[in-house]
Amino acid sequence: MHYFLELFVVLVLGSVAMHVSDPGVASSLESLRIDGNLSFHDVSLAARDFGNRYRLLPSAVLHPGSVSDVAATVRHVFRMGSGSKLTVAARGHGHSLQGQAQADGGIVVRMENLRGCETKVHDGEQPYVDASGGALWINVLLECLKHGLAPKSWTDYLHLTIGGTLSNAGISGQAFRHGPQISNVHQLEIVTGKGELLNCSAEENADLFYAALGGLGQFGIITRARIALEPAPKMVKWIRVLYSDFASFTEDQEMLISLKETFDYIEGFVIINRTGLLNNWRSSFNPQNPVQASEFDSDGRILFCLEMTKNFDQDNAETVNQVKLLHTTSPPMHVRIGSSPQKSSPPPPLWLQQVEALLSKLRYIPSTLFQSEVSYLEFLDRVHVSEVKLRSKGLWEVPHPWLNLLIPRTRIRDFAAQVFGKILPDSNNGPILLYPLNKSKWDNRTSAVIPDEEIFYLVAFLSSAPSSSDHDSLDRALKQNDRILDFCKQAGIRMKQYLPYYTMQEEWRAHFGDRWEDFARRKGVYDPLYILAPGQRIFQKAV
Ligand code: FAD
Image 1 (tube, rainbow, N blue to C red):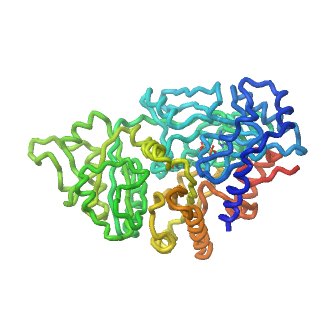
Image 2 (cartoon, rainbow, N blue to C red):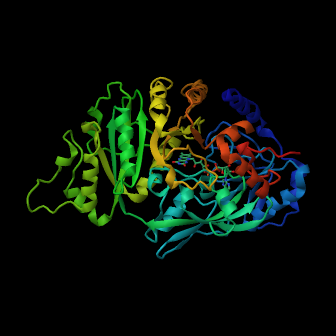
Image 3 (spheres, protein in one colour):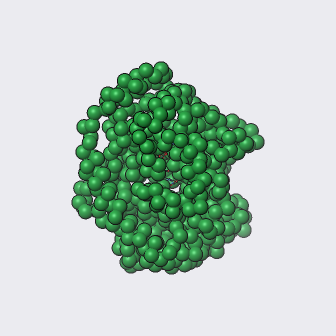
């Protein structure tokens, strides 16, 4: 299965670390007049990614001083024609899992170094931000917050680039309301595989616009994106509750995403065989009552944590402190900690009443209501806190055999029954996210593919395999991934991989299904020589 190939790549290709850049490539590129620079020797960083399993050395790394550097480089490679095996990969923050941003012997464009596309916020009735394709979402957010604005749709982790997440979809707990990040883009500036620099939107070059969104980098390099904004909330009430019954958990999630007045963010995760419930690398969550949290005994059960937030303004923060509801073993609706329900007490603000009303509809284990209040920035950047901790322990730059699946709603219970506790005996290697998304918020003109049902679930197995802890942990995680994929196949679950990884074109065809013809047609139009994003392994440049 795939893991043999993967081990081969790590062991064999990984050992090519001493590979010396092709002198022919260097002399051919030296003729290019560019504002930035090309590096031919210091290229090993471009052969790494977050997955930490694939190391494909490029011949050169472009540090673009301008958008025209990107266009000139791709145009140069295009003009070399099909006789050249040179390819070009845009590298965002290199947070791919299986070498998708790498280019074996090709040119890697370090998008983070792209100059000349500064982040610019436009206020107004329908605010938006123009940002570089190489900008990190965290930096775009910081700039937008200066104007009291923020993008609408997120990923859980913000140290990813705009071009990188828009090439996939960009999903998080806001997607049920706003759609994925690719549903929140007004315009793109793109360098195609022919080296043309084009603006595109729903009105102009629409085919290219939709092709590039979720397009796995196949149709062009996104040098600039115009992203929809909304007024930024100041604070977030962050709530977690636990379930032991999977059906109640998912029914409640689905009910919440179907309501008009609901939480602003809805996710969930699975906890298998854990004793320390909050011992989770993604968790920057502080229970208000740590004693109660630690006293809760999971009793070896598989638990499902529903996670949600409600935005509110700072002005209301004081009221929140006075009127602390939630929490404790009593049913949440009737408990207001720190305030006696005197007649003269001001009523809780509307948003808090909404929270109470929503919680009263849920069927979680009553003693497991945890909450926290943090700034919007702190909430959105929550995974970075864990990153810093893990880095300090040497546990960030380890292999990450992640598997992300989109499972149709009608099969999610079959999936859960087989995978949680059976194929996966525990979740100690990393979090397992599970939350619903709705198809109507996705635009089927984009290249992203999703299951053919209105509701589908993201199930993300986010494993880490530090070699220090257990030499077999990578192998075991990869085998588990294969077993999960095999089960889906045998059980006829029509799932789609998110951040897909396939090695053969037949598999890609199956992934895209009836969208394949269009995907391949667009490739022929915008990157006919198969120059771009070779690390996705969809099209092979013919020589
Ligand atoms: P890279 O890995 O550098 O590139 C990804 C692909 O896009 C490559 O094929 C590359 O060639 C191409 N590409 C990069 N830049 C451009 C560009 N400007 N134009 C065209 N193509 C380009 N995803 C979610 O949706 N939701 C999450 O909550 C989420 N959480 C994550 C948390 C962590 C800790 C990590 C590591 C990843 C997470 N991801 C999540 C996945 C993430 O969206 C993808 O890994 C994404 O590809 C990473 O972006 P990057 O900027 O590092 O891109």
